[in-house]
Amino acid sequence: MKHIKTLFMGLMTIAAGSCSDFLDHTPDERTEIDSEDKVVSLLIASYPGAAPCWLGEISSDNLLDNQSPHLPSSTNDKQILSHYNYSHFSRFDNELYAFEPATTATYGDYDSPGMIWGEYYASTASVNHALEAIAKMEGGNADPAKFSDKLRCAWAEAHLLRAYNHFMLVNLFAQPYKDEETSKQDVGVPYVTTVEDVVSKDYDRSNVAETYRKIGEDLEEGLKYVSDYNYNTAPKYHFNVNAAHAFAARYYLFARQYEKVIKHADAVLSTDSAQMQRMMMDYSVFGDCSTADDFAKAWQHPDRNNNLMLLCTNSLLQRRAWGYRYSVAGPCARGAMMVHQSPLWSGYICPPQAVVSGMLFSSSASDYGFISSKIFEEFEYADKIAGTGFPHIIYRAFTSMNLLLERAEAEIMLGRYEDAKRDLKFYWNSSINSMSPSDYKQFVEGKSLKYMTDDVFSAYYNKADNYNCFENWDFTRQLSSKFVVPADAVALMNCLNDFRRFENVFEGMRYFDIKRWGLPVSHIIGLEGDSIGLEVNDPRRAIEVPWEALSAGMESSRTPVAKDTRSFSIDYESLRVKSE
Image 1 (cartoon, helix red, strand yellow):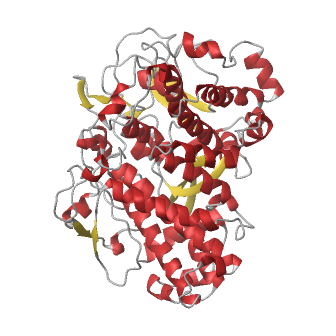
Image 2 (cartoon, rainbow, N blue to C red; image 1 turned 135 degrees about the horizontal axis):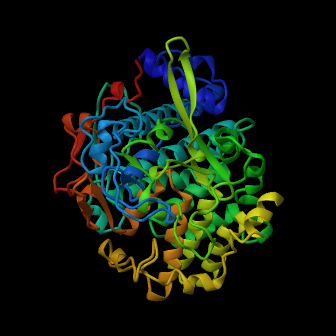
Image 3 (cartoon, one colour; image 1 turned 90 degrees about the vertical axis):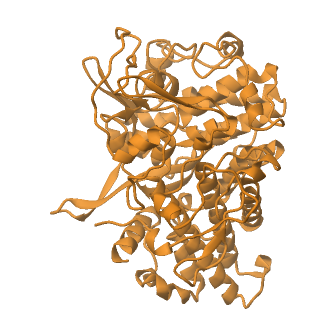
């Protein structure tokens, strides 16, 4: 348990400042959470310490197998098929890329399904301890309106974090939400709301519809009482008010309750152009950047209005993302990083300094793949002589730029096309408008970057042969007959798809979109170019739970719900990240 606690506490200390001394005690002693400050400190240390980025990216269409025949990323290079014999970073990467269970990974492997599963459930266990402590301190009073300001804020944060944990778990390890009835046929994830007083306990896995219902209940409870009262320091590392609204918008988008998406997005962004501009990413901060560290600090800084909630996580994402077998390269780079012909810029690649702050690592014609400083690694040494420690990345759980695109999607689905056009144009043009004078002169006046206009929707995004564009979006109906994208919304959805893929590259959300929209996805593997494609309702679209959980009797994520009740045991002793 020493190594488990050390990594957990070290990570959260970096993310949110120093923790109370009581957290240095063993988990068994945490039953004595008998003060408001201890509850707040426990919640500070309760956020999950694993990033879903790599798991989402390698399951999506953003990564290429460099061993397979493919064209180079740059259209300026000679367009001939080539392949590179780069080795995998981890063996379980090969399994995940083939849409297979990660049988060679464990709970302790960075970026593995086991680490994600373990961290999010261990986070939930801590949250439940905090809620139990609040209930005891309030003497059974169940009305948060009568709590102190500090406990009421903690109560809201705990419910929001519990909802968020299960939201991430169900969207990774289950089928996407389809509709209230259809989703009753897909296995969900256990919704854990009680404190553990035994090593393992049986839980009903239930179904996706039920999991979403419980997420919604916790979310609404948190929204009732959320405030920034407890966050005098490091507010962006908590469920602050803006982050709570951003989470609500995302949840309701996935649940296809579009009016609520707009309501919560408006609470953060407003519809006033000046206020919207203030909430977007400020690209002027890149004007003085020269190193990857500079760019990373500019992207991730908690003072950026664009960053609504940040999580400090353990991940080797930056090391995995280039120079190994799977990377954002070739046609995947063209689709994900907009390295393709577009009316929004001229040249073979969008200027990385102005738009993505990314870098292309290459040697002659050898394309190693793109990487972005959004995922810059900070290494915390536990022993400098031995060279051991913990790799950290900042995971941007919610941003204003993403929230704007989520509102645009809701507007499209409600038939409010002019509003959607406004938001899609604003997403792109706000970046140009916030550039430093020198970058603006170089890229805009130099005609590399161009403003988004109404003409682009019809001239580019109406053409199915362009990247991220489809002739129609009828594939959504295979998820649910109620999920209909009208023909007159196709160009807008194509633009949204292009922008969301670009905005979320390296952050894992692309796979969430593939699942919830029913987008086609396939991977070309190995020198023979074998193709593995997943149909809309393929059970492999749900990432399989860790093999340790399967061995303990948990039902596979890739089977439909049976009539009998399914349950399994969660062994909390094995969930936390372990370090040698």
